Length: 613
Image (cartoon, rainbow, N blue to C red; front, side, top):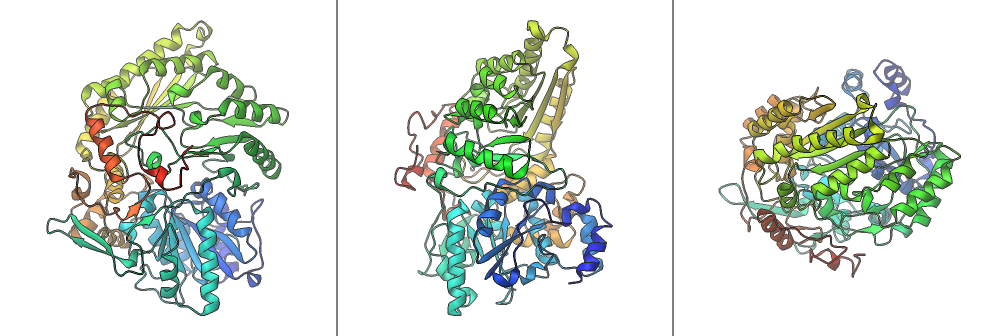
């Protein structure tokens, strides 16, 4: 590849820093002294991908091996893609600018269904055949992991191998096996058969899918006895002993999360019924404050960042949060390193915690009530009351915050117009609370309440995997209603495109037949579907029509209890029986307790010999 030409082209596009590399803490190795070249591919732009914690972890983990070199690959924006196609520049890795077709393994992380067309685009730009059937021994292995991999079926035609679960241990096992097979002269198929027997590894080509006449799945079964009937996810048991980098690449441009990310624990015990992450990332495992303080010290020293973000599904549920926050603030107050808290459960907000965080600098405060009424919060098992909500908001205002962000979902199962009205009622009470407090008087103009709603998308491995999604028309009408009732002073309302949520739902619960539609849509010019300015809904609908597939089959259809799902051969620990029982409890508005207080029998404890804390 002409790297001088590439340098000239990079200088001609928007945000050339996306393609330059050479950032602070970037890993440089001699490619002639490694046995495995691994490309970690994120199917979105640089500033999104560089904010992803999983990439930060696996990049340094793989590069700590002397025999391997991990480089980064991001989806080029449209202006860069145009230049690459015009001048026949193949998709390249950031570190060396070498074409990715020269690598041994390309690993994609699957974070969002609306990035799937970018996967095909990266492969095509890399001059690599899209499907495993078209590739041969000279092509890289194409592998995947991440939350969307738990329903891999719409992408089954495109990937050789998929990792189910956490990657820190299994990636070493795969790389070791790859080297072993390479030394033995074993071909790709031989490697895949051996890999299929590593716990957590799924090889889609080794499984057949049979369908009923009405389109539902009849059976998913292995093609022979050399591979397991079910694939059990991988979990790491002890986070204190699990690899975590003490350095991170510092970009030259602003990225979405431009700060130190400190992962404090994994999993969630709350059991919100809409939340896929809360089910698939079980069980909860915590890092100790002592380990986190040591990591934070090294990361501040090695990156120069002035802000630390505590990363988890529900930061307020960390059992030693107060000790950790006080320890971090004490340790870094002289260096003026701030601390940001992600979206909090309103029942876990503590005024003392807020006061501690503000000692250095005031950062944003975000809460996620999810639903406007207590009835609907009980349906989704949110487990908080309006009293919790208002006490937390009052604490925030008393601690000096004047700007609050609130996240809700619309289109939830059992939702009524009264539930939507509850959002406006809650916002009005928040305003009243602010203006009633003595210390806020004279600061009326400072109040800002941002309300954001996303459209509910039924996801695999949740109690709501059986329900029908609201139609686009229903979601649009609900958004218009909220626009009307939230058009008031001090309040800003944001919402998403129901068409995007519709397509996300199609692929979230889709099967292998969607691979044809995905390829057709990409051929028509679809990419960056998660970006509003580039989303081409009409082209997607043409692709469905041309392939003879009705997308509404996957979204607006309620499932029966015993329906076979495309992902039923994947074992995440939480049983289908448990999920159904939670769905039945949702209809009855019955709550399930936090499983740290009492085991609810979800099944995940069987995965790791009593791993639940």
